[in-house]
Image 1 (cartoon, rainbow, N blue to C red):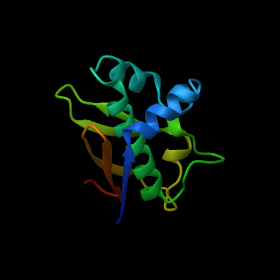
Image 2 (image 1 turned 45 degrees about the vertical axis):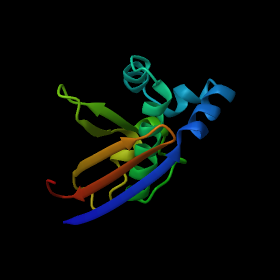
Image 3 (image 1 turned 135 degrees about the horizontal axis):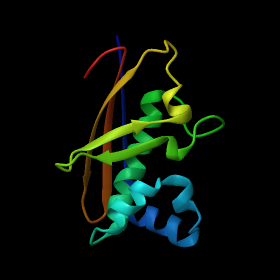
Image 4 (image 1 turned 180 degrees about the vertical axis):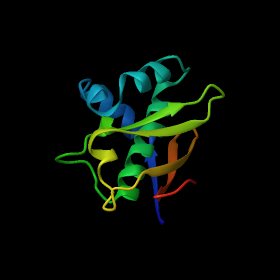
Length: 128
């Protein structure tokens, strides 16, 4: 069993500026389900920033980054009925483990007015 950790901190203003300057980026980075979830929030940008940080933290834990074979939307933050965030890995993100074993994931998100942070723990070949 192998454990990998990733963390990312992002300024909410940076994500807001990115999406306002390039509206097409929102569809490239976030899934429809993520966009819908954030659209219902008072400040959607702070929630989008937390998901952006989660994607970055996941790519760090996977050791891949975004590039050929792995897209932003391959990492999705999905909330349970009780609101707890979970990770859903698809596409290239689900195929990046060297062992080919299943990956269990735990995620924690937090945000303030200026910053959003995400921490991701991946356990290869076991449950968290």
